[in-house]
Length: 228
Image (cartoon, rainbow, N blue to C red; front, side):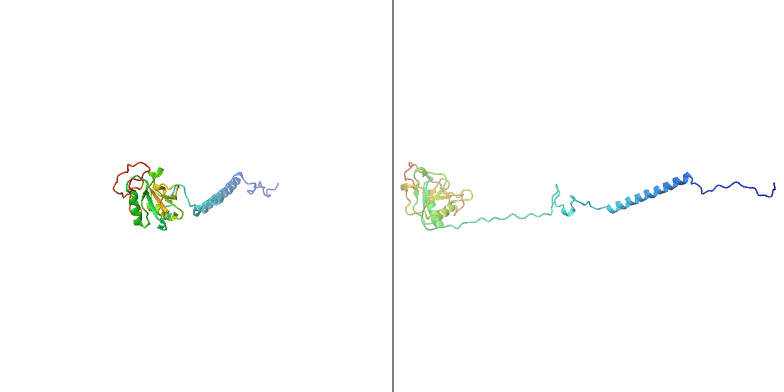
């Protein structure tokens, strides 16, 4: 054999053949890192955009709708001033008719004193008299009227009334509860009880004003010996 023939070398293995295991793992790790990084960036962006935002949706009230908070007092609220009630006064009626005062208190001279006071106030007065029968002595003053004397009686009752003690008027009973059961032509009868006997007429003076005490009558019930 000739030595001039070139010697044959063994074939060189290609480096581009099947990829080694290390290269595959590196690629997988890189892909996972990209995905994780993307997720982290998205979470950061979401957190930044939602910071400071108020929740919304059905059942959620906005600050403008929260008008009352339990346990807290709104010091800016204003309270309306209470209404001022002005008491009304009914004009007094002095006529027509005559008023008679009957002493139903047992205090001597009480009817005469009340008659003078009502005369001073403006009413036309008849002679004072005494109460009779069961009404000889009563605790509470009452004013009676005949037909046509209703308004005058109401005004006289108002003159005797105080804020804490109101005198009422009513229709004249039968028989009339005074000596001889008559008051003549008078249309109004004041039965002066122990509550107002010896006291000044409230229309003319304070209700606590008193008149000097007088002697109580000692005559039997049904007689008219006491001073009206």
